[in-house]
Amino acid sequence: VVNVRDITERKLAEEEREKLNQQINQMQKLESLGLLAGGIAHDFNNLLGGMFGFVELAKLHLDDNKPHEARDELIEALGVFERTKALTRQLLTFAKGGAPIRFPRDLTPLIKTSAQFALSGSTVSSTCSIAQDLWACDCDENQIGQVIDNIIINAQQAMPLGGTILISAENMSIDEKRVATGLQAGNFVKISIKDKGIGIAKDLLPKIFDPFFTTKAMGHGLGLATVYSIVKRHGGWIEVESEPGTGTTFLIFLPASQAKIFTEQNTKANEYKSIGRILIMDDESFMRDTESAMLKSIGFEVAQAKDGQEALALFSWAHANGKPFIVSILDLTIPNGMGGEEAVKEILKIDKTAIVIVSSGYADDPVMMSPADYGFTAKIEKPFRRAELIKMLSENLK
Image (cartoon, rainbow, N blue to C red; front, side, top):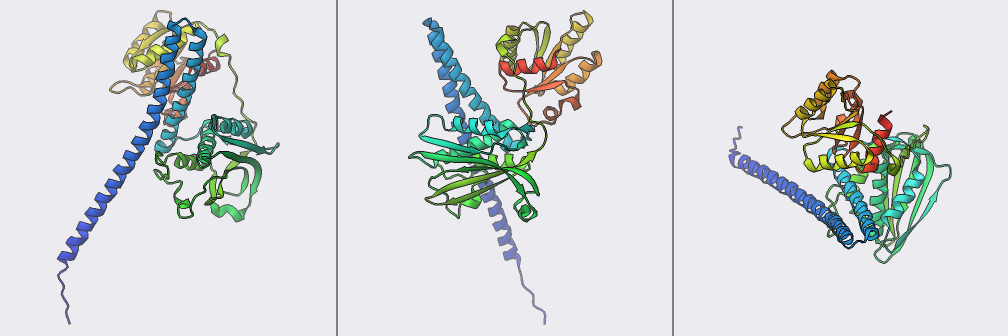
């Protein structure tokens, strides 16, 4: 018995279904990108509005000969600047990986400061219960601060009528029984953040760390996705316990460190003075002017270059005429021109002892992660403030 069937129509139907599925997937991606762009644009517009507003008010106060009021407005503008910088880092961490720069840290002040900042001006308060002998953690202070900040903001928004968030941190040893959760056996610091808010429905719990998933009308679904990404990149784990109507608890596990706690050298920016000639290279004129003004306020002479070719010409002339630059600060990426990675090689051919700093907003670029491997002395991340510039110079200039 031979049974022959013509499956042409079925094949055509399958192909049409496949094309339809691809179109649906593409539409979902575009919808997600639109949601992302809208959320980020909304947040950035608010932050830019704050900065413009404070700066404009400061100008008005100066016109009215009220320097103290102008100073207060500029301090507020700097606070908004830090929030804008944090939003940029959040987006980069989610989009490109944002590999953490890890040092042994004491988490106690970081947890307390992040909680205080996140709840500033709200009707929600917090209580902290932190073990006095809390182990240090190998972590990126900015990224872990962002984790605490995002979770506490979520908790605060879950309690619109106010209340108290309970924060605790303790030492914990993980045995082999718990390895299935994603942790290797070893010593960890366990951070618990508990609210008494509206809670999360059980069917939504598995989705809360998904990119773009949000239950907020104005949310963009990046906060908890970024939290999950950061914790995982630190070799840690995060869990959520929640019941609708009773509240939510986030549990964060970070690997403990036995190394000596890293402490940054505090540089008194207002007292730092130096002399010498510095070369800066950046394709944006306003960045060159801003950096020049910062450096001149410290006491340096500054030469500007818009790309690598111009920087090399200035460096070569200065070296040949006995007026060498004590430091060169090079932008990593120059559109349609020679960037820092290529320029530093040519500079070191002229003077192998040259101090060359790489500058970029892409913190997770391989050059920024390991500047010495590419010939640079050190790095500075954009955007940076005057105090950060001074700290970098004081560490690299003898």
